Image 1 (cartoon, rainbow, N blue to C red):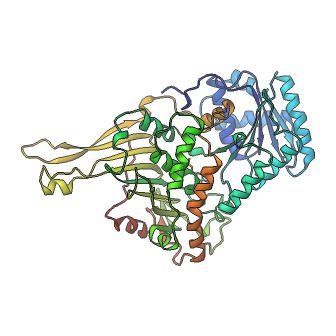
Image 2 (cartoon, helix red, strand yellow):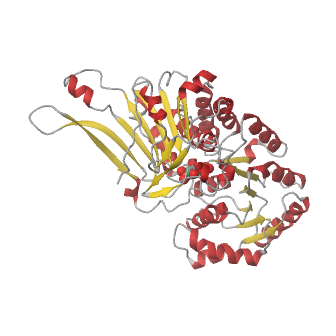
Image 3 (cartoon, rainbow, N blue to C red):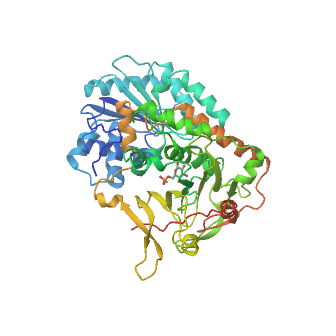
Length: 509
Ligand code: BG6
């Protein structure tokens, strides 16, 4: 597997200073620094670069270098080469400061200049806001106030933020207005880590790099689409955040609708930047927001009770740390959506996501219509399953196409056989955090894999009416599924209404 970004670029990113706000946090040590290290090993980091970490925790350059040197050994996704890391850590700087204090940002300007002089850097600066979303607007305001967001033709300034982009439609709009006081839309890189996953990027290659699927990729041949994002994990130590969020905001508004739009979009005219994003947003705009009656009949919410995960007893959501013991926050959602355009009219898109489910898996199942004629008799026809295409996004990345074959023997009997492709056949190549492509793309100014604001807005327009109805009619029977199951029974009933059923694909391998 060639370790290259989707965009096909394989030259190093632009020389730049990378400023990470939240430098002592989890995301930085687990993902961002290991990803930058991987890019360096792959020769995709520019020869000239520096990293400036900013956080409230006390520290200085030397302490930060020592701390990250210890951490990289734990979190790198490949064995750490001493010489390679030594060169990396020398380029790291640390600034202790309060984000509310403008003086921090004046000092940041000086620190950036220091790094630029030491490493012969141009004026390009990438700001990564690995901080709570409550700080997004504040940090950008302060950067703007000291002139750090100002671009010149030979010095770009880019800001990466990661979801949640708002809590609902109104707050998403407010955040966007605040950001746009200091930044052009082209300077804002909204990360969705699902778009950094190889198999999610592969959806585009699969659809548009092969000629055989596109002609059947529509309502004439496709009966339904299912997207499952199931986790075995509970809320872990994020109860404080999650209890104000729930799965609809946490997973559907961003990751799942983004995957759905890749599945459903029209072929873009090119693979970069706005061509893809234009097509994706059209899909979201074609999903009509539900009215209250549709919310009641087309959505199911759930919350996990205690149960068994991998043989171990786990507590109910309401007993998790920092969760309100009477919480009505949903940890499971299933819903039926329609993309109302000529390609997809009347094809149901079933999506579901939840925590503490029976299996950790993300899969897209494309269900094809039955063969039109009873050539092999009614029994065979009704007992055989229509063709299905399964895109296994994680954990065992691959693609399965279920087809029919004749079972060997004197009479005609059909058997479903899987045609399987597994990413592991590529061997090495997946030693990544999922952030490499995204960081690299930001450095070269490639925007395809980042959310443009119009798609954020369109996603909130889909999700907010559901949140409103759920808030007006609090769930009565929470918790309503045991940990370690596939969610509440109503989730199966939702599909049964139209003669469908969830596919619980066994893990491959
Ligand atoms: C995050 C959510 O965006 O995605 C988490 O906030 C969730 O709640 C995580 O666990 C799932 O990501 P992945 O890559 O493990 O499927």
